[in-house]
Image (cartoon, rainbow, N blue to C red; front, side, top):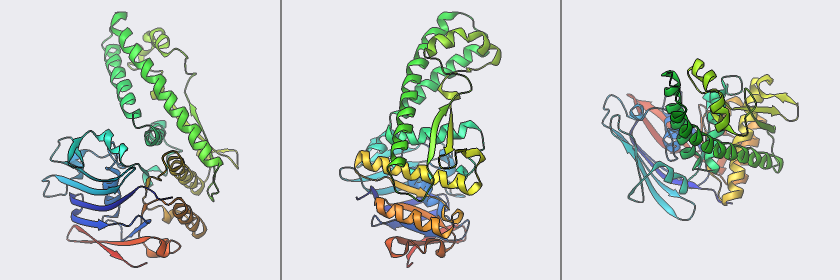
Amino acid sequence: MRGLAITSLTLSHFRSHRLTRMEFDGRPVAIRGPNGAGKTNVLEAVSLLSPGRGMRRAATEDFARRPETIGWKIRATLDGFEAGHEVETTAEGVEARQVRIDGKAAPQLALARVLRVVWLVPAMDRLWIEAAEGRRRFLDRLVLSFRPDHAEVSLDYEKAMRDRNRLLRDQVTDPHWYAALEARMAAAAARIDENRVATLTRLAAAQDGAETGFPRADLALDFPEPEPEDLAAALATGRRRDMAAGRTLNGPHRADLAATHRDKGMAAAHCSTGEQKALLISLILANARALAADQGRAPVILLDEVAAHLDETRRAMLYDEICALGAQALMTGTEAHLFADLGARGQWFEVAESDGISLVKECSP
């Protein structure tokens, strides 16, 4: 199977990259170099070829190279779902980033029609032991890879909830002010829940049907209290309680993602650090397999410093699975030996830093 791929990438005044050009041939990509050289910035740029704020969730102005701060630009040529595409995303100052596809202005959501990107970054390593907000964000990113319209539904829910919360904080008691907002929230919540459940079902099937060296994770949605069948009615009933709290206490924004190491029957939060990382990798690979099965093309996979947390056997398993999937995976690491088992099956690049500028060159394994 041939995966979706980036065939060329140009970064202009993006983070530490003043001007970087990279050409790819669809194989997995190993990017090596010392800490601080600008490896992760390449992956972040690729993550911005999908809807949203990218893998670091940074503000638009933070992408600009300093001290110039003259704006930034990312340009890529894609081997997309049905054809080749030219994609460009750019911004100046604090302005919202702009997207152009094949020379025409487009909304960010349109990026999902030409490319799908999934990622795993070191900031996720504590996902299973930190607050539920991070796990919700992780889950919704998985959902977006299958159902890009999930972003619009989620935004509609959040906007209606913000308006309701404002009424609660202002101690408004007139039910007519609440009814329309609560109806909007309930309608959006039903679609959010449907999307999330469908994604968990799809990931479970992708894990069950795979030959993998990584542990399987059983996933479920968890709520601090039972989720009502009729959210609009529950919100109406709970207004007094919510007013005392100053916020909405029921709905999909309170959901948590529960994960269990299937073979051990142990909650992910109680697993070792290595097992927690392996469960995350397993889910990212399952996500990629499911997308490949559904769409006929594997997504682009971004794995930042992932090899450093795996032993030699697991690293070899990871590269074997990526190659079997036919995916273009961009992976970073500080040392060449971390990618030894990938060898000539991938492209190799080296990143160095000189006077605060990242320099990238293709190299041999």
